[in-house]
Length: 467
Ligand SMILES: *Cc1c(COP(=O)(O)O)cnc(C)c1O
Image (cartoon, rainbow, N blue to C red; front, side):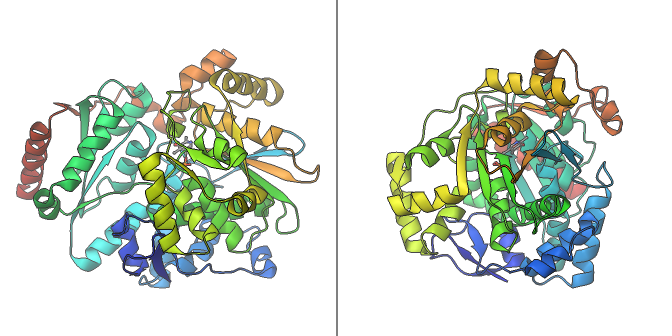
């Protein structure tokens, strides 16, 4: 499989190149040149297989340059380390509303499902090329811990994660700072999440530094992350009887990565009636689907911080399909959006998107009400991100025979305060994470000053090279 940029003018790359590339050189995102197709019979044949088997079969067409047995072993090792034998188990909440739990990875959020595999893929690629990379990232919580867990102890990787000092929750901070690996470097920057992002951009823009340390990123625009997330759309739909049963998904959405993976499953042949794009008060996507106009706003903090995003970068991948894969037109549209903060993609495109995607928005109070209601009705504790998906699933106006699957993107114990406020019950961490709250932390507090940060990087990397 080859990969093309959504903006049409970057080099066409192989899977292995796309893995390390991140953003395309023309500012676009990489997508597969064509969609591999599964027939209904091939989809039925996946029923009842272990998660890792489905994962191998679903991802294999996208992967080139890695021998099949090697890729299969990588996939098996990845999911063998998860905390639930079914990997992505499901629960029924109501007659037609189901939940897929995507929080059985090491950091209790759905990002593990992709990043745990991406970490292994990185190691494989770097060993083959005889290279080392330095991963630099900013996090408001979830991504940083998932990246650290995926990259810790990887031989050819150093990882530097910036989080805003005293502005992430205790569980989130400890998930990053209690990792004991020598290749993991936590920085608490004295500033906001935006300051962290700006610092990362500034480091990437320093050509000398970037070349010396071979900087790379594992952000949500990485194609391999989208690819690995396709798998649980298949396993979830299959478990309920697809392709012989009507299925829809409700997905708590920030960067549009998770829901776009569902769209990929559809393009591969899995019948899906509808996607409900569930947002919090940061509702740019819900507003767009209602009005046809995409307009940025200021980011407001909510109970579901991993969805506090105003520009959903992966949406560009969907646009590319709706512009009939014409990269030049996508580039023009994105340029206009960047310049003016507002865009209309044309009525026909908007209506075509609305045939498949519905927007949904839930405020913080209603989020707590949903957590309380699910607890009352089912005895399940759900986290605020998941609650937005569940409310969206309940209120999706679909035919009575459509089963709606809400994606549970985080474990309730990751956001214990909101859950306790809604239910009076404090969710407990799974036993395998029980030591989290007492383990020693490793983290360096730095001023929001480029010189201080660069000196720290130089010192750390020199020490690591000497070791
Ligand atoms: C990252 C994240 C999301 C948003 O996912 P996208 O792929 O960015 O749309 C939702 N919920 C949780 C818990 C997350 O960590």
